[in-house]
Image (cartoon, rainbow, N blue to C red; front, side, top):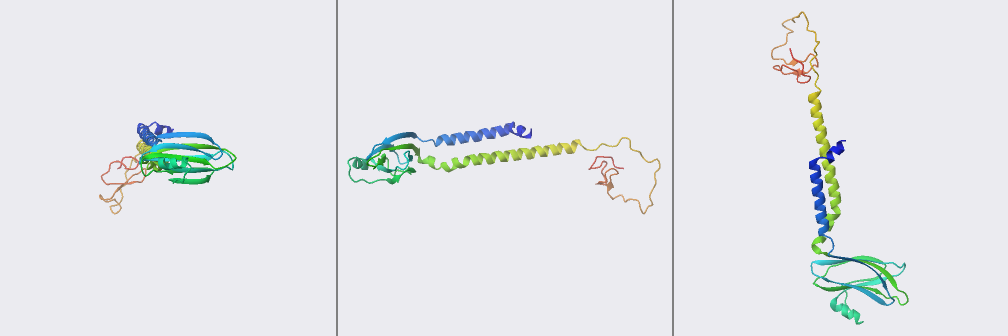
Length: 236
């Protein structure tokens, strides 16, 4: 029941909603500008290429898997000029190069804005290769948020735990305070007062400056107190 009361708390709902809105804003701000998946069969001694125009503040994320067991491909990243050399069968320069890969994930960060090509080459003379490619283009500004996005669920869980602990602590403190004031013992109604007062000798009589002790609970009270601080009984 305490847990349900905590989650029904208006303040808790507002904080949780704010966290979810922040999470959604950050998540959608780093969604890829261009995302595509491809399944492609590459013939023997042939290739398959993807291309995209990248500005200097963008980067390309590629994940490629060879679906045929035991087969591999070569992967090249080329700009427009060197891709034309590659097509003509001439020597070429690669921005990135990965050979004999069955599965690979990599990122390409261009130095200058240009059209870039990612080439998947099958050098096998006799058999084709079936591949799966996951291609995503991001802005570099979103790259700095990747770590925060990874840590954000952990941060949310910690915040929720702290809120619950604070709420439970406040609830217990409030309950203790109410119990203290509502469960004070009442003054006995049928208390018997002695019919005869026996005076103690002067040497044994308490001084006026001595504290008062409660007859019911024995609590020491201030000399000017009229009621016991512990149980509320009247002091003689």
